[in-house]
Image (cartoon, rainbow, N blue to C red; front, top):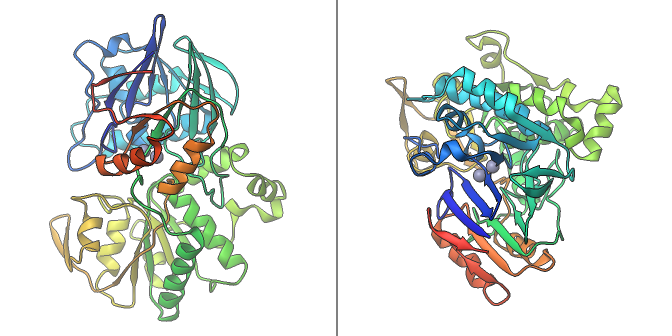
Length: 429
Ligand SMILES: [Zn+2]
Ligand SMILES: [Zn+2]
């Protein structure tokens, strides 16, 4: 068996891996790397047309964002994944098409992605490029899956995983059996703070600002963290641990919430139960609001909590709020997700007091806070996960910076054969 990374090796972004042997061949994920420039997977000239099967682990664009371009370039693949992934990709690709720079693929290509998508349930067996394939809960976002492929050997690809679970999702499945593991290592060199400590900090920061009569702005990714935060706040408000103010959702978070609601069977049992007892449907919570007007007058009028895209302040309504609320020291901006190099979010975290929005200089006098709430597994969780796989012989580390992957490798080497492939390097399994 042969494994080749065309992106997502020794880097985070543009995940695209080919697994093949004799008459079997499948592409695992098909993402882009978003930053100041968009980077595509490094497929050699002419290769894309030959791609017949893609399994998509989850909807985040670093795993799915190249699907439109792949079809634009002449590939006619069957796309395999869970039902919520299909729904979320539709929204995320359309958004990427709308706001992305130099996007070549068309709305027709997006329609093709939707048409070619074959949606499955957890554990349902299907054929992907000749491999007997099934998908298991990865605990990362709605519809995120680990992919188990059986050819002459069993290979498990994690995609992005989280062990902890959230208000909405159970943690990833453990103790599967596989000969080889393709493991993500986003936080390979870092222990993440416990969920409880992070949540306590978030609640404390919000209470403080509400008490002072300020607005809380939480920039969030459209899918994943946004819903986790909204449900967390709803929980605390319902129990009285947070004062009753309006929780506004704005931008793509809003659209993604609808898709979460339509895919309730993929959330954890506790959420399903609440939805079924319609008097307590958390999606219809009386604490959630959406802005009534384009100028957001209602949101700006009174102290409240705003959860809005985009997560790194690269666009979206969150910028409008920053313009309107940024100069008041009573207000607070709370970061809950990773801020990449070169983004406004990172600039502010590193202490910038003035930022540019639409050629306008915006002075920032509001308070800044950071709370780590990750949808990924930390170092020891990743190690624990690998050690739980039965029959495991080989580990291939991807989706991480080299330093983090090497730290993981040092801890896995005594028990397994470990590889840290570069992009375009062939690995034997
Ligand atoms: Zn992800
Ligand atoms: Zn990812």
